[in-house]
Amino acid sequence: MNFILFTGFHNRTGSIKLSLGLVASGLLVLLTAVSGGMGWVGYKMGQQQAEQAALVDPTDLVLQAALADQRNAISEAREQTQQHLDALALRLGQMQSHIMRLDALGERLTKVGMLDEDEFDFSVAPPVGGLDASGSAKSLELNELLADLQQMSQTIDDRERKLDFMEELIMNRRLQQEIYPAGRPIKKGWISSHFGYRKDPFTGKKAFHHGVDFAGKKGADVFSVAAGVVSKAGKQSGYGYLVEINHGNGYTTRYGHNGEILVKTGDRIAKEQVIAKMGSTGRSTGPHVHFEVLQNGKKVNPWKYLRKSAAKNRSQNKRSG
Image (cartoon, rainbow, N blue to C red; front, side, top):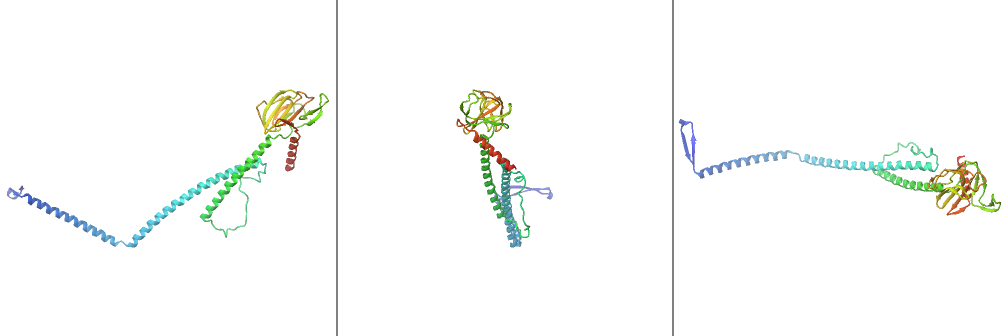
């Protein structure tokens, strides 16, 4: 292998002839020198880092590890506390909703039961009192607070079930009172003929009268004695203009001899609703209402239903007095 050399000495050129083995040996020496230098540099850098690590106090490493553990514990405690607070807030919201429902239910029961609304005012907290014990008072522990909330939740659920049951009983009883025949079909007037045998006003013979006659002023209001559905409304032989109301539970009432009918078949009727005007149609000698009560299709004496209403009115008058 020939290498051409350019020199500035006497502006002459020359050449050197080198063998391939000599060039390879030279390159091997050069690579060995570079590798050795890099190894020396790495050794020195590792030695320097080891010396710096030897200068660190082992106590600092322990403290750093302890601080890291405490940070992790605080983070976990904070997360658990937030989860507990979220659960308590959710439960508190549910309890507040239940209390609002209980207040509304209590107000309804107060009205239905005709209780004193000032005495049972659910919009204000119940009045309480006692001596000042702040000197010996203690704050509740978290477990005590949780136990109290759990007990309160159970109490609210129990009261809600009981009040629902009471409301159902009261409403059913009120419904029974509404559909049970009780009261007079007129506001003013008198009984002109009772239930049972009497002298027939047209023939003078003894005949059975299946209702009670209420005499009054022509055109006076005729009332339904219970809630129900009109089963007949029109002219009927002997009754004149008749209104018949089905109250359910086997009860039916009839109102005969009306001068005018104000309802029609199929109408839903409320208790004490005006259904007709008093008249003297049909087999009648003057303005009156022929009032009948049927139980399971059989005509019964209306007197006990009239008497029940009278006793109820006397009881209400005594309470109001």
